[in-house]
Image 1 (spheres, helix red, strand yellow):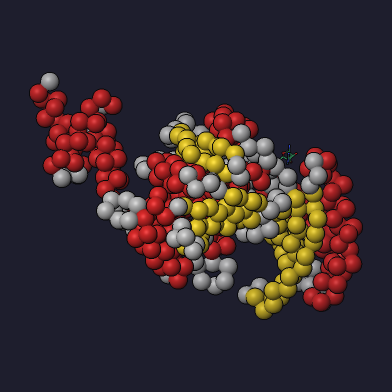
Image 2 (spheres, rainbow, N blue to C red; image 1 turned 30 degrees about the vertical axis):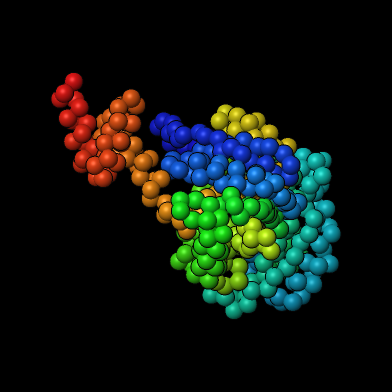
Length: 380
Ligand code: NAD
């Protein structure tokens, strides 16, 4: 799959449970090294489930390919020439890419943007909109923009430099929303309405403060990335798109919105670009990804995007509910203690006892874990 390989590197493969999306049940495969993510996601999905589950939707899988044109004799004339030649250029792309066109996809639009007085002078940026069907589509769209570049040069009289997709795939948005009954939110000495109130305060913080929004969105991506990694998708591409979208208005903000309805129930929604595929890339080449997609049972890239959006929303609720009540350390420390025990040389059977002792002593540190493991070795 890649170059200079010296081995394989494995990570835990888990399933998040309790997802009900558009009336259908899903087990969400997740590959991740961070403790607590899968448990928090499953618990939060259960809260949504008990109030009816998620409603999700996704746009048609339209990707954007960019072509950068420089050294133009006349920028305005170039824009006019592109408008006049657009139908032909689209036909040229679709005549070549038979496989995606046969499945109902292909190029659908070509738009021009002028970027003036940049450090490299005026430039014309063309956006080829391309329906990639069930693929993530990077290769399909990169081939298409490379293919038409010479034609663009001859039509505009300019020089083409870059020809590459944009990871800000904002024509390919996915969204999910859901409700949690107020009484289900109660936890650890807090009533349901107190928890709802505290979650709304936390959400308001993330809406206005980029320092908080970055962490808020990182929590969302904990779930989405784990699903993407499990299914062989390019999680860096989705990360790049999500964060660029979160900053679309000039200030980086939260990818979710939370409000309370008249009955005091909490309502959450998420919207983000989700360029994911169920064919192409590693989705079929990697046996683990193949299994994950089978387990998930999605029939299209759009359906996978809907599941990913719901997973992101569930993960956000899990984090907000913990942060706004007990804090997240309490749950984390147990897993952390176990990891320290394993790192100190405890075997699978001892790890539980060593972690328990670290927690009991209130000293969850690697030195103490090493000392406990050594003591146990001496006494056996
Ligand atoms: P791909 O190159 O494997 O192409 C998908 C192919 O699958 C299509 O060309 C089509 O022939 C075939 N196909 C079969 N059934 C299909 C269906 N139902 N719908 C659509 N196509 C179908 O994969 P891709 O999705 O074009 O590219 C994804 C890969 O590109 C990822 O591995 C990603 O990491 C990589 N990549 C990403 C970037 C970026 O994000 N900036 C840049 C370059 C490459």
